[in-house]
Length: 274
Image (cartoon, rainbow, N blue to C red; front, side):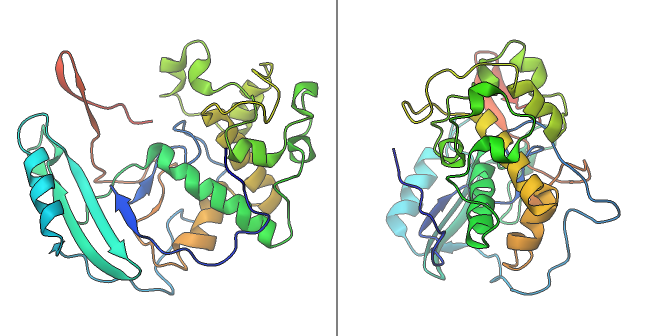
């Protein structure tokens, strides 16, 4: 269990990031395609403010270099991107393995990845930013923002969703999840789907990883900000921070994304885009 602060506070610096890259998944909240588009406005805005250092190989940590080169050898070796930084100083940056085995395309330093559930941190940051602006509080009842609201959700607070303690059943625990995960759905459809199920436990009594909770947080961000989650994240974080290769691909226009792979009994298998 961890304590979620009332205010987001200062400006934390990156100290260690493995596979630290680029494009949020088709649904930036839980791996299911979802967006509330804003007409005539691209999801990825041009770089307006901050600039980023050049992308180049850095290997000033010899022991880490040796270890990664060792574990990346062979067909089942490590494949991905590694970035280590102390404050603003990059200590290590390198890539290993293939971006696309079928096309014989190796990973590059500027390869763009789907972030999948790592995108939850951006949804959480959006909630804390709206709290800092006085728009909402993490202690707000979920039913303050989601109407009509099931009676079962009355004890759920936003901080329960943030901390995976809400009791709202996860999408993966529901029937036909394999089909659902590759079927695009709107934010409203995802919220309505969650309303059909009772809580699994009283809010705050257990910790259970929950994609559905972050879908609901994404819905709250949209209702509180009046923007789609993708546009809110772009305006609030990605453009001001110079994250020109980071954003949502919910419009289906993202190209040249790295293909994810998994090791199954039948061999190396490309992951489904979801």
